[in-house]
Image 1 (cartoon, rainbow, N blue to C red):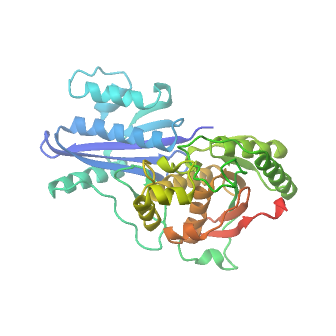
Image 2: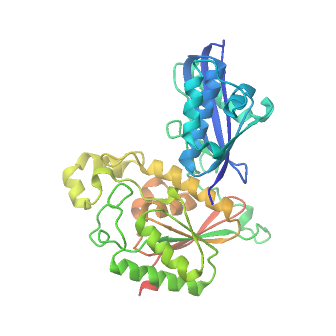
Image 3: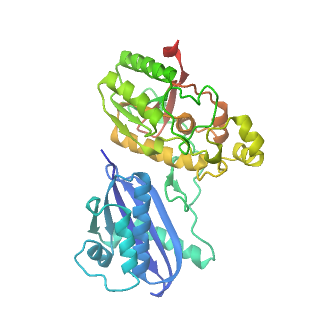
Length: 388
């Protein structure tokens, strides 16, 4: 079942036309939580052009979160709502190409438009004004940095998708014996079984050959299925859409009598030109890029568009979507080394370089519990007892 999002968008111009900017937020359709933001100063333009650009940015952010999502667009611009709903003609030449672009982002049947009063569009309006203020100061809008050790949502102006909390809040009442936070949501994190590349320790991300499970990998998936069936607590299965994770998840789900839901945010990082190479081969061919990558979560493998910071954004969004759909349930999450380590790191509130200090074997199990007060508890890491 695809996600349901609410997009709130706005745009403004100081002078109409004049210095203009837009803002947009994407909310989870079930919880109303903001999961993505976008804003940009667009130079000299009219209010209507800025509003259309806000709409486009919001729809693109929603598509990036889930390309199969249904979206309810809510704007205080009656003009944009009526035109995009097909009730008013679009006569102005500046708006015709913008409306056409907006219609190509998601299929028309999955997008609805609703007019809302201005006071209910405050978040998008705030972002549009922040963008115009930034333009006045001679710069582009940048997301506000989160305060340390909080769970507030921040954003990336470039990537649009909201960055999840990088630190877990210091445990408070949730850990007291008298506090009743209800049943936590538990993620049982299963790394896929081996492929031909795994024992050779070759980089295998989302930009490579998408290998299938080897004979040993299929055996590992069966052993994981046996162990998880014996536990008897799994209520849902979510997996990365890559072949090795699909095969692992489907093996376990068949044993449990469950269906698999696929989540693109759980796929492995794109390792670019490093795909299929060993660490030693990368060190020999791309020493500077490798050193930069090991030194900063913002650095990308040679030829890749993804850093560990990018991964953190999408893995955190995937986490929040799974949590919103499965409150109080135990969910098997079948993924890869980097996304699983990232989810563990976020639960611990650990720094980015902690990824290099975790061992995660093929077909290993980890477990994280998420509580109603925003805290998380790592219950298991790299368990391979079912493979012995």
